[in-house]
Length: 72
Image (tube, rainbow, N blue to C red):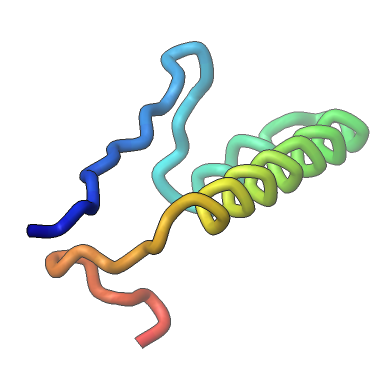
């Protein structure tokens, strides 16, 4: 018997959840002021790094069978 647990990360309904990097870029680049774009990219980068760090410290990730590795 395995002692691993299935965990599902939840998103917040308070914020938009992007499905692709292209959607993020389109949303951020739709802002007209360069300072707004810069701050949005900065916040996005901080958020991605924080989330990646927490996931990597906590979980051993494996690809789902139906979702192949994007680098292959």
